Image 1 (cartoon, rainbow, N blue to C red):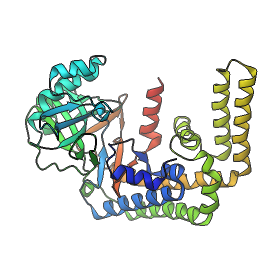
Image 2 (image 1 turned 45 degrees about the horizontal axis):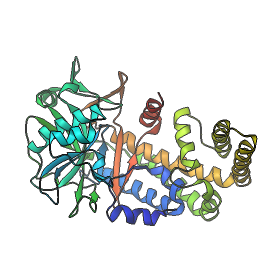
Image 3 (image 1 turned 60 degrees about the vertical axis):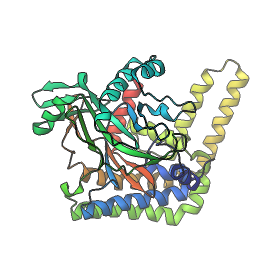
Image 4 (image 1 turned 120 degrees about the vertical axis):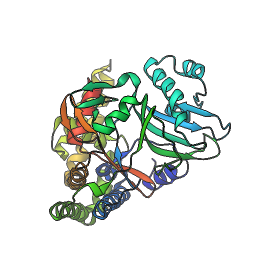
Length: 390
């Protein structure tokens, strides 16, 4: 199993941009080390907001799609565009429109976005360097409304007004750049969440901006700060008091993609309060579903016995599981307080989901070379998870 420390080293030593973890989920993945990182990341965001900083240490998360990798190839020097498949074992690098048709002809939607990216991103790209961003719109995606000009790259509909709307109306492509890669070749490139945007040009055909969030635009009241600190103190107390036994007892169900993490996603969809009993039911239901697909009674019996082993372990250690989930709750509440404050500034765009006004998708704090998600899961994550299931 990949430990948290080796996970951080792997990220720092050349892995490409991966799935970003929710702050409160880190202890569910990596136990004590995960808690320490989550606590430090949340405290960094807290202090960043208090200071009114504006840098890539804290960025807004944009709900763009697809991700696009672009720039000048470190070996050939030629301009290219790509999806995340740029980092496949057999990379799909597109220098020409024929390359796009060859590499992505099976996916017309992606192919069209890459055609537009190849046409326009070179107009603003620095002469060297490889970058990654979220595509927000191509020319045909924009819609006029009474509120302004809108586009819906994924779950959120973004709407711009005034001068911002006029720039978007004139643009043929919109992109938010959030990552820069460093390295002598594509294979060994390292993701850097602090892209240097100074060398980007400007062109009326491309609407682009940094993901950096200006916290001078928000008010972090003493009441909000005390609320944040209260939940952080409660989480720290559970960690200090029960950590040694709590992390050891819950180890069988911790880890990336393991039962605790999938259970939390389940509770986001259903609005359930996480608990040891709820985890037992979640695992039992998963095994029942898996067992129903098996053809022989013997195979079904083995699945049932395996499920019972999980349930018995959780029953015998229910106090430790409940403490871990209480700690998760306090970290989540502290994070939600930061998100509520950061939501005061929407980055110049209105946000809607299914015509209902919403907040931004969330934010990212870049701590110790590792990005951590700050997202109100009851709002955006739930909408996104339910959308995926439709």
